[in-house]
Length: 194
Image 1 (cartoon, rainbow, N blue to C red):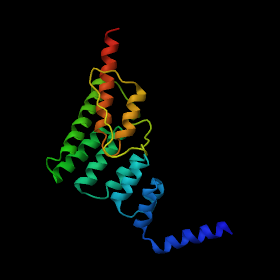
Image 2 (image 1 turned 30 degrees about the horizontal axis):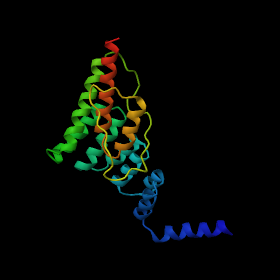
Image 3 (image 1 turned 60 degrees about the horizontal axis):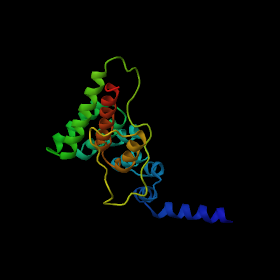
Image 4 (image 1 turned 45 degrees about the vertical axis):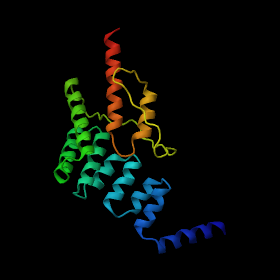
């Protein structure tokens, strides 16, 4: 009997809510895959896939619109997949549509620096991708929370970088990449002194 009641309640909600309203309910409950499958708006679909850690699907959804925001978000997704040249192109397009956008300028610079680091590394990377190992969103983050800055000469552990990533991944890879570069620079300095 209980299963029938639940089934009727779910069916009833489907009758009265639009796909966007259903998607928003899933999104607020942090059921991002279900939200992405419910939404019809490409920007909301992309945002839900991004939050689910499905960056390629997010980029594909964002590509269905040619707005500054869609290109910016698509660039963010490509950065997290380690496809820096594609990300740079998307940031460039976002800047064409919205010149002097500080976040797009900053993220473009970081993607460009990361691409140069890969070029300087030399060798054949094969089909490897450099991006986030795992993406987990901090569900307990409060607005206006304490932010952590990392000095370039400060050694940071992998767990500290992951903790910063969890706090700051919400919309921009810039902070994660800045912390990652500081960590790599600290480790490179430490390796050369040994």
